[in-house]
Image (cartoon, rainbow, N blue to C red; front, side, top):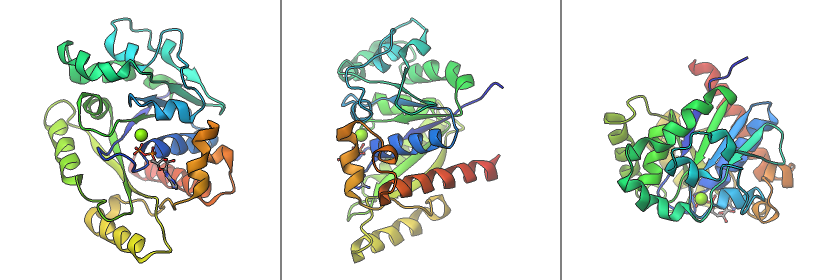
Length: 262
Ligand code: ADP
Ligand code: MG
């Protein structure tokens, strides 16, 4: 049966809010739930690629850099398998650092990634894009290519700082390149429930974003932090950890929401 992947950008211009961690572990949990999933690494730091033990790996056609900058449209050649069945990656490498500048002089610079991913929709159920900690051209490409945006917010003092800027960028993309761009959901990450602060920030975010916030939140958990050093999603590294359980629960809630929308 032909699929028609939904494309989701994981975005927040703040660094360290668990974009990459969420992209890896939501995707891995979805693949374990029988979904065919592609992860796209759009961050020049390539943490997603290395977090899956694929540092310096590329397909025969290269990496995301080649996909967005070259005119060779064999984008399937830039995808590599992972240790999990049904989970695939379009890896990033150092070259992507220069892409932000190279893109400026290319035609249709904002929709380069869309051009790459649209033809891949029939092969996947979900395509998740990990974006860099900025609102530059690479993130813009992710937002233009995506159907929805998943926003991770970490439960600390300034979680909502900068969010107005992200929301207005989403609005701008809607008004120009991608009228149908929607918010997939807001995810509370690194929640330290033992502290009042975690609870307070969580309540604050829920007040601000209402039903867009997932009921599942992700606790701060050492196993989540260790897993990428072993090149594994936490759902593989330690499936019984609280972090892994949270991401599996998130995938379940995520899938249930798809059902109730369509
Ligand atoms: P971003 O991609 O937004 O910059 P990362 O996913 O790289 O953020 O996460 C930042 C750091 O926090 C990483 O070292 C990561 O391993 C760690 N981290 C992410 N989520 C958790 C968590 N739930 N518990 C503990 N550490 C976490
Ligand atoms: Mg990251």
